[in-house]
Each structure stands twice: as C-alpha cells, then as structure tokens.
Image (cartoon, rainbow, N blue to C red; front, side, top):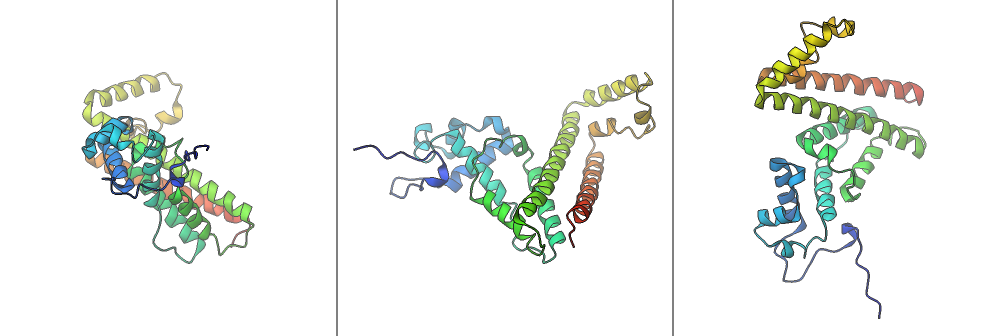
Length: 249
C-alpha cells in the first residue's frame, strides 16, 4: 500500500493534536520572532529556536519539518499585524489606512523586509489582499484593474519601507561607530570639492548625504518624521495619478 505523501506546505498539515505536543505553532513562531528581533534573521535556526523553547532540536521537528515552515509561520504572524479591525467607508481613506499600517508594521520588523522572499503564501497574506481589495469595493472597476491599483500602492509602500529602514539603520550604525559620521562628512566634502555634484552642493550645509548618518536621537526623530511626511506626499500623489488615469471618483 503506497504511503500517503505529507504536504510540503505547512498550511496543509494539521497541528499535532495528540497528547505528545508541548508547543503550539504560535509558541514556536513567537520564539522565532524573538530571536530575529534580538539577534537578526540569520540567527533563526532550528537549533536556536529549540534553545529558546528549552527543548531538543529533534523535538522541534515534531512540530515543523524545515526552516521554510518557520519562515512561513513568521511571515504569517507579521502579516496578521497588517490587518485593520475596520475599514473606513471611503475607498481612498481605506487605502491610505492600509498603506500606513503596512509601512508601520514593516518598520517595526525592519529585518523582515529582506528576509521573506521565499516565504510560503499563508492565510494572513490572503486576508491582507482580501482586505486591500475590499477597500476598493466602492469603485466601479474591473477585478483586474483593482488588482493593478492595489499592486501599485503596495509596491510603493514596500519601497518606502525599504528606504526608510535602510536610512534609520545607517543612523543607528553611526551611533555605535562615531567615526562613520566623520568619514561620511569627509567623503562628502571631498566629492563636492570636485565640482561634479553642483546640485548636491547647493544643499550645503544641510548635507542630505550626511543627514543619513547623524547619530543623535533628535536627528533620528527628524529623519523619521521627514521620511513619514515624504511617504504621505508620495502616497497621495500616486492616488491622485490613479484617480486621473483610471477615471476614479
């Protein structure tokens, strides 16, 4: 009699429901997220999660088969944070609310932005897309056009989160390495002196390049606020353009 194939996708496999389990998927996910937040995504291994749960690595394999399972659970847990309890009735306000929430969540887990390229599409990913499409219900658009509109906004949000996380990471790095700020200033002065960058030179002494390395809390707060304002401006510019190009109301 042929053996039943165990699905590769964790969402198709039921959780253990006999008396043996000590851990739920939620507990394993929480442990993995804690490791990622404190030690970086590279530290998320079956062995390290087992240590966090105070069990053997082999025991952990009873609940998850591979690291891909762990990544899928982590990804789905973070996407759960994207979901809004209620959407505004106005489609544009709803889209903006989802966009802001998505960006905020990604920036709360900056390591996640570059870590989930191979993550399995899970239930909360589907809920996020469903809610994003629900925001567009008031619009008289074809389903294909609604998907396009959502994809455009979602790509912008993700791009903003990537740039913001990178900028704040540079500032944090310079705080731990003050020489980095001095080097950034020296490099900027050296390059501007060549005359090859007249437009950048016109910003002096504001120094848009150096600002990204300033290590003080005030500078970080200013940078965060400036990037948030830039995000809002860009978000409304994109929606304004979509209103015109897609004949929205």
